[in-house]
Image (cartoon, rainbow, N blue to C red; front, side, top):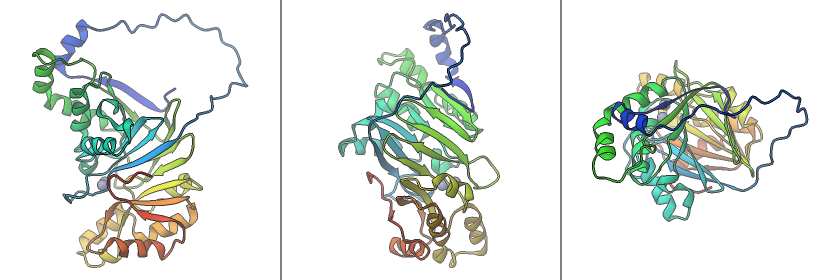
Length: 323
Ligand SMILES: [Zn+2]
Ligand SMILES: [Zn+2]
């Protein structure tokens, strides 16, 4: 079922003792199946509907109205988190109050990371531990670029004392929910289940692996750019999609920044008028701006910039927008 992945379950050293004691036999007892051709085997048709919840539309600056980059695609009440910037679990809890019951903390079991930048990952310990304390009783599955396993191991090591106290003190705690099943992925189909098919594709945001994701849901196709400069791969994967969720930086605002910042942003992020050109080619049903780097201009100015080269539907996303 899982393709293009390297997998290893992450757990803390202290917990390994307990986990070993309770370890279930995972050896396969299945008899080898006889080989036979099944050329007509068809995938089951997925049914249901999806919700997109913008959990955080911010960027590294601590804007109190915007949490760090994170969103959830919820299909048939099952959440799939993309990126985990600061505030991810609290925003998910806020979405529950808005009626998105699939984002209850103990249901946060699957996440996809676009890249390892801190604004996208400082909510990672929150996503590992808070749902566990709230009763999640299965490991968190996380998919992302090379380096994710290393980061995960160090987070678990940093919280070893907490894990030990919860597991071995009086607190009723299960021994599964803090564990992380990490899969470092390559471009291609990286995940599928009865609700979604998820494809990762390479984007360009510095000299390290960064991904965008395409979610094929029962009712629509959703493409997420991750952080990237203008990238043909995004246009290719977003061609004709229903919703394109894309990062953006104001080119107009950037003119007032120092040459060093101009060079950085124009090489690592997508400028508003560039995004408009990309969207004109990809023709998504709806373009959603997130991770808006306004550079001192207003949101209306940024939208004008995008619309200068794009006449389709576009909205500037806000935290807790449900689409
Ligand atoms: Zn980044
Ligand atoms: Zn970022």
